[in-house]
Image (tube, rainbow, N blue to C red):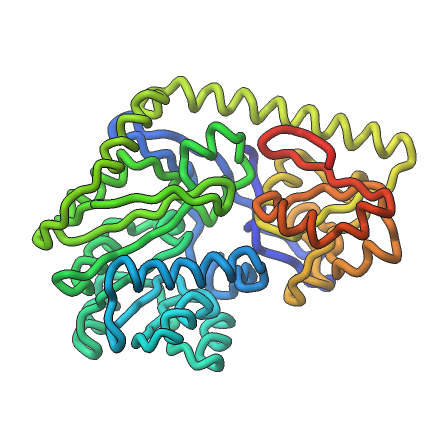
Length: 390
């Protein structure tokens, strides 16, 4: 996919003329374990020490986190006063729902800005990357966890074997590790190529994960399909010594992955071909609209959007600006393409003809939110899973 800047590396105006580091972006698949992974790794300090993605700004994600906490407490029968730890806890939103149910909570996140916010909200958070040493320190100071969560974080991790060791050390004997992340089968089927970026090192199907956890005496005993982020899965992991019965759905998933030939090279080559077609058609359509004098903007200063715009070469010649609801991003510029970012209210005053929806994973929420814009004649251009107008 070429070379790109860090996808969440939004720029202040004074930095636009400074050199902007770019890094190769591509994916490969391992023919031994069939894990799809990046070809080039960026040092995590560059991406995660100051982090601008905050899921709690989305109504969709707030509802999801609340529902997740409720269901886990009920299904796993977690008692009040139990220790719940969230790896990659961001601003502490998920843990706040566990705290409301009288759990002891602890967050772990490397982003200095988000750790400060979480602690101010009363969610105790350690500012660090999770690893084996951090796990040992926490276990000594606080004891073992009844539940460890990791939402959209496992795929960000380079030292994934050490993280598994840390999880094993930190879990109580009957404890459970629950992780959520986008599902590879959905990424391939729905052409979700813009979820491929430097923060996401791995793209998981179930088969490679079973192999991974087995190496650390951990077992995936249950799994659930989720609609979030274009199609995700939630896995339930326990120590092998806990002897939790493996649910039939786990075998069903593996059987389905074999049926879809995810353990062969064919679907990956076909995915690459379709992605090239989407790029060609989108750029051609935007140029046609511009030639007709149409005003086009971007909706959502997201990492997905930055991948899309850099990969397709979409800059201020094709988009006037991007709007976003997050104050952190407003007044900055998109990495690589240097498109200015404004609040969503600008849609009311400027009235663009079209808005390229880059945050398609929140499509339903955004289309509902922007009924007035659409009633005035504004239209959304959506690229995933295929190019269409709403």
